[in-house]
Length: 243
Image (spheres, rainbow, N blue to C red):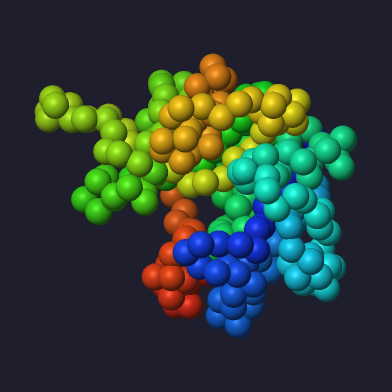
């Protein structure tokens, strides 16, 4: 099985300017992401899809591969789809965001585990148990709930579900923004128009659900640190990365 990992990386960022090139513990953020992905034995190829010659030069300078993409592409998954066109032999395509410097190889293996097991979901994503005391009400922590087969029912920045019957419990997961697509579905996904819930929540995975496709939620116990704010960038300087 050929598994392609595409890391979409834009140079522009409103909250953290020039984010992919910022140093984290002495190394550019995008280099962290690339090198950690390259250590995953399940992955056949790793490429960075970028709109920046600076990012492309950096990755090529460490022996990596890049694809130049239009800066006006709307979402990371759309950018991944464009890059995947250069790799027609890929069976599965991973979308690994360029602001996940501490991603662990085993998390990527967990993400693609259904495909390796012989299943063929439209797409998969990753989640971990939600800290209900801290993150249940936080919009920055995306919540996901699933059906009993482990397929996503909904993703939201709001607290879901509403626990009206306090004596009952239901699993709520903290979504981690990693995705893997069956290649043929990724080519379908890129043609789908954006949807109302996707736009209001600003969660691109809702596009698949709103068009009637399924997303398998794979579970992990590992934590990572996505860099979306200056505060998270400061936290990254002290983050202890352990495989």
